[in-house]
Length: 293
Image (tube, rainbow, N blue to C red; front, side):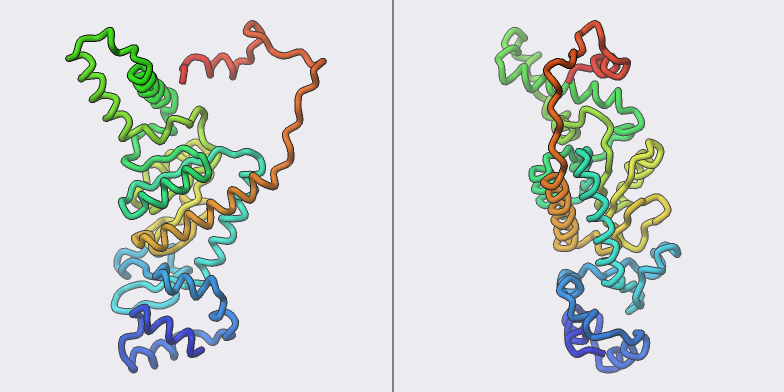
């Protein structure tokens, strides 16, 4: 085994004793030293992204990503993490080139900071507090609630709420704060997203199922207890680690921004081309005007 590889495994706590090191050397297939001198693999080891769930909690379909087991804890192969991450990055980059709308779902406290930074950089809607059932499968109703939240915000900012009594304003203010905690990140979601990005597919299994039903691709960072059958682009890894989650979102953020930067320029409409009037709306346009956002 390469010495640098042993150092990383020992430093990460996988190797605790000399006997464990000998056992690990015996169980690991021979690999070229270059594979484990790779900067990405080393970084994943340093981040602790390779820690899986206990063997009892691991989904049998995730065994292909498991490198070995130590102390009943599954150790995820960093080569699988890196490979899956590259595929996910290529996918979101291509989608970004075509102007796709991304929706981020990350409600864990450890993902709060990284999720906010991701949403701000990518300028995409996100769910950070709690997933509301029907966000995708009952989109019209959720959109109406978001529109109501926006109208309350605009009413308070413009002073339009002054016409109500003090008690009525207090009630509406409480309603606005409650809606803001749940729906605040969805203000820019005017249509169904083209891609749903999830941190921990098991925790957000309802969001994953809704995306599946709507035919929306799912990119997820999840541990060994996930079911890969419901995820289009699964990046296995320690989804309970703040550093690992931050790495995952930063990698996708950079890929999306690259895709948008390299997107072909939008063709401007010819001045001689007649524009649609209010009386010439398409069925899709008419449907979109039912809910004012």
